Image (cartoon, rainbow, N blue to C red):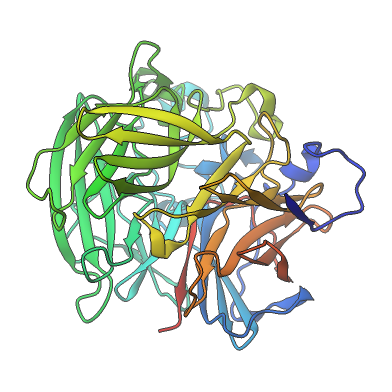
Length: 497
């Protein structure tokens, strides 16, 4: 195993971290920057990197002394990094949602958060307030001529791709009804059926759950148009944060989760805090045929899955009579209780995510699971050109501990064929977010390209953008941002057209 370190002066053992260093990233973003040139503090920015990196995540976590109960309740803020000729221009801007503007004006929380943030006044003040606050904080993509800030329980917000100005809620040219859910985890099909496209979904939950599977054109004059649309109703409550695709299938994992809405209705908990694992329940795979695949028009398949809870999938592909799905599994649904402070969480009491591979046998409708890596990890991806196909290499954020849960402080490249790894570490005072692998334009090797990662650098109480070589995770460049950015969620890269 090869290891590279941002700070090699510490004598701390792997896995040891300062909680104050980790928690220091949870702060409000106080400034918005326009066209700010970033200085390179180490290395050089590759001149053949041309395009824009977008990142989304919570940027407002406190108002008038009241903190959100969970970082996922923080208002969304987009950061963009425009690359050209070895230079990087930075811009950041809050998404001007209706709730953000109202709360900015009032300087206090006016809405409840899905993950437990309450309005002042206790349960009485929050009871029967069932409004959803669309915080637009989970992901950011380009579709057609718009940049979309995504939050999975409602419509996306449309932004200007260059200025990041908020245009408002988007129904995607009439595709979405008011308030209709639109996933924060779309998949970019690299061209399994000729032209590339964006595949995504929305889910309406209840005693029965309805999945709407949508595909949009991403190239040419019809970019942004809906090209395929299918709805399927399946039994049971569905908590679906992510999904996977292959050329022929859209794959959903229905976690064995139940939802008791009463504490939410009575103002005692956020909606997500009302989720709990079904001790006698079984997870299920829902396999929906894609409309351009060889099973088009056929009914979905339901196949029992292994125990565990999944937020994110790495990839999926087909092999003869099998679908292989790689996902990050938790032993149970992780949550922060109403009386807990997220900055003081006990990592040892929360299950860690481990990477597993599931083989779904389509001939006998069974599945089996093996572990690929039992080191705590999250935010895994493959080369985007191999989305839905067998990929050898993967990149993920990981802890520096070999076992157990801990903050994400390293980037790991894992060979999915033989288990070999190499690691770039930001420990002991650096904490990483989601890595984003960007292949070189004319690359011939699967792991030829770069990995972008935002790092909370506690040594300077600031955020760095680190660029790594994808093949060996050697450092290419480190750039210091002019504003701290809290631990974030997801992002995307779009090359210059």
